[in-house]
Length: 224
Length: 224
DNA sequence: GGAACAGTTCGGCGCCGCCCGAACCATCCC
DNA sequence: GGGATGGTTCGGGCGGCGCCGAACTGTTCC
Image 1: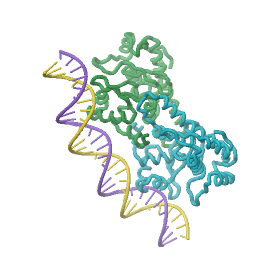
Image 2 (image 1 turned 30 degrees about the horizontal axis):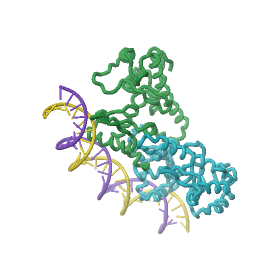
Image 3 (image 1 turned 90 degrees about the vertical axis):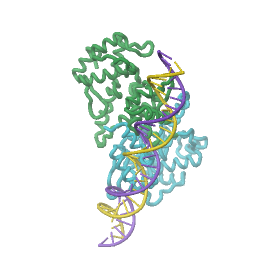
Image 4 (image 1 turned 60 degrees about the horizontal axis):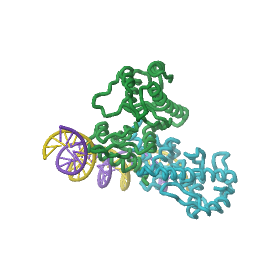
């Protein structure tokens, strides 16, 4: 059994922590993707990934010449989330503000590059209900979904893209899946850019703006 | 807002992690006590404590020439617990075993050097009910409690001891207090030594042995 | 005032950890 | 087979961090 210091040490490095936060989307990334994303050489990424795997934070899956890694499980993800969202609130008195922040994050927050919290779950439900995403065999974007994506968000999947368009990401507060993947990321980016959402406070919480309420109703027939 | 790596770095050191685990008992320790406990010089302890305070993990309270520190709050304690109890379970398939481990820890586990979980709470209730511990003004061991402690556990408070005999420690799973302090530590140590309890698995879970069931019934009139 | 004690600050030392480049292995594709 | 690509291993360099001892400040007690 590892000591507290050993476990913490796994995350106490910029590169490794960036890896873990990227993997919070639940996907399996290749070593090269992570290296480029974190801005380090492949050799460095390889070493750091091996440490995280040995420490039980990640698991790997070899396919041909690729090395896919993902978070080892919900506990690992919860640990990453807890460490990432730990806010010191050095001045204890304002418990009120702290609880406001936490409930704001429960309502709607970003989960690395897509949306989570109640908002993320509601949007995922709506897209499934409207037939934009199919869940019968795994998770896939339907033809209607692709059209919607191009039409509503102006997003076309770049040719040769590795990242799947859509992927379930279990929400650690809601315990229900929301949508990650390129679709989730595009939706989140568009919503922030067009000011359907704006970030509140210094954390990861977001809130729906008035025009956002209208946009989400028009696009997905949901009230948020 | 601190980065994941910064937050993790606060715990990624042997000395600082030992401090945090000691403070899991909910008490306020002085800088000198922690230094002796961790086996480092006072100057080192002073520096490391300042880092933990600046990082929002601990809070300090100066009284005369003493510097008392304690965990900053439940979130900090939860983080320490999560990091300390993170078990890799590298082989993912056995989700069953994992859930068994977690429920075993909820029933009965060690909280650094004393007992927590449902078992810890039940024992604390029994000791209060039998008048061994008084909770009217703070928490204190009664005369009967001292006699019981000497008689049942063979424990005498060493002269000049700093550590209080008993102290409430809020349980993060039960949300109710159990007993920490020298009493809790002595009880836990005795129970393990006399095989009233034994550790199960590689985590912090313990289970009550058959002779333990009898011992706890005889000592405290509780069935566990 | 003087002595004992708790804690802090500072300089310096040693080690460990992160990163890179280069060389190397394996896989895929033509 | 040959070339391109993904990944690993190894040696080396550099920086930072944790530790200590020594000197200092502040508190308590006689």
